Amino acid sequence: NAGVTQTPKFQVLKTGQSMTLQCAQDMNHEYMSWYRQDPGMGLRLIHYSVGAGITDQGEVPNGYNVSRSTTEDFPLRLLSAAPSQTSVYFCASSYSRRTSEKLFFGSGTQLSVL
Amino acid sequence: QQQVKQSPQSLIVQKGGISIINCAYENTAFDYFPWYQQFPGKGPALLIAIRPDVSEKKEGRFTISFNKSAKQFSLHIMDSQPGDSATYFCAASNTTPGGYQKVTFGTGTKLQVIP
Image 1 (tube, rainbow over the protein chains, first blue to last red):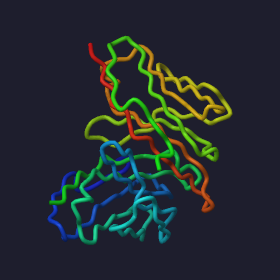
Image 2: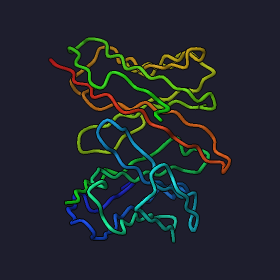
Image 3: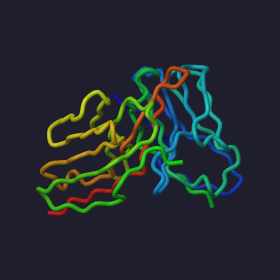
C-alpha cells in the first residue's frame, strides 16, 4: 500500500500565484485533513473532511480552499499565495471520524512563497 | 492559545540514556493522548498513545506516564539509541459536536541521541 501520497514534494511560488497541493490515500479512509508545520508552532489544522462532499475549517483556514469529490483525494488550493504561507504542508487521513486522532501522514510538501 | 504545552524544545541524550519529554494540557475534555515521531523529511507517525483512565503505558522502550490531576503527561525513551533521533510531538484530542476527534499538537521536541 502506498498510504498517503502528497505531490509535489517541493514548490516555490511568487506572491499572488495560485496552486494546488495534491493528496491521495489508498486505504479507504473516511477522514482526511491538511496541516501546516511551522518552527515552534507544531502542527496546525487547516481544513478537514469527514467524507466525500463534506469539508470544514480547522484552526488556520484563511487563504486555503479544499474539496472532496472522492474518498481517495483531498486537494488543498492556495488561492493567492502570500509569504506567510511558506511552510511544510502535511496531508493526513484516518479510518473514520471516530478514530481521527489516529492519523496517517503523508511525507509533506515544502512550500516557499517569495 | 497553546492548549498543549511541550518541553523541552530540544534535547541531547547520550546513547543508552533516558530521554524525557513533558507535556501539559488545559482542556479537561481531552480524552486521548498520542505521541507522534517524525524523522527528517518524513511525516509524523503515531508512536504510542494513552487514555486518561490509566497512569502508564509501555511499548518496548517507550513509556507514557500520565498524571490526570496535574494535567500532565510525558514520554520516556529508555536505552535511547541514535535511531531514536527525531522530532517528537505530543498531542491531545477531544470529541467535537460533529463526532470527530479534534487533535491538538504540542510544538515538538527535537531529540538527538549521540553515540
